[in-house]
Image (tube, rainbow, N blue to C red; front, side, top):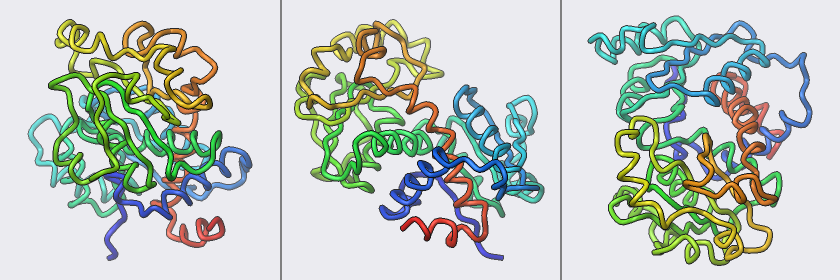
Amino acid sequence: MMNPRHFITLFDLSSEEFRTLIQRAIQLKTERNIDYQPLKGKVLAMIFEKSSTRTRISFETGMAQFGGTALFLSPRDTQLGRGEPLEDSARVISSMVDGIMLRTHLHQTVVTFAEHSRVPVINGLTDIYHPCQLLADMQTYVELRGDIAGKTVAWVGDGNNMCHTYIQAAMVLDFKLNIACPKNYSPDASIVAAAGNRIQFFDTPNAAAKNADLIVTDVWASMGQEQEQSLRVTAFKEYQITQTTMDAANPDALFMHCLPAHRGEEASAEVIDGAQSVIFQEAENRLHAQKALLELLLCPNHTKITSTLL
């Protein structure tokens, strides 16, 4: 049996594949054909150790629109949290379904699942990476501004899983990444080192935003970090994206946020609801980008489907 193809990080796509996937997502969005059901009879198991709005709705809707079915499995619905080895869970679940999407805490959980699964495994989010969100972000940029190669992106805020994934995207899609993080909240040093001179660090949001084409942020305290909220509010208070930050960027710069957003914390309401903000188009594109991803991973003839777009 051939080894299944997984999507654990952005490095599982070549530059060409990433761009093809974006174009396919745009095509699926603009030319919806309800009779095209490539996943008819297929089942995606969605395992959520961390809850989600956009991840669940987008994968479930995507499977339904493609004629397939999605199973929602919370920690209460599986043996994952009750001591069954991950290896055994992966073998059992993958023997009954056609794909597995995990949204979990430890990145190693997804890696282990993939090693022991006979079907494709998708990383729906871990503490280290959030690759599905980057597919949507990059689709949104391409729709509005064209290819991102050679452009400059500013990441402001926590050096978290989104920041790590932007670092990988900079390498795969060939753009520059300016990062402004508070002290002690920098991204993982080994992930940064791999990107070499594509990455530059700045002390303030406005400095990072200078000449940027895209400005991105995330919540100050991610899920599971709520107990750190007051500490983080103090540490991040100088890292709010304001209209002044946006004005430091290029005039046609876009603002993105993976949501949920807290107006008045990581970004001002003026920015979140402003003319440069594309957060709701970005959120919708989770659906279209993931449909392109599901097609790539779960359709055995996906090379024929995607090669027409090269």
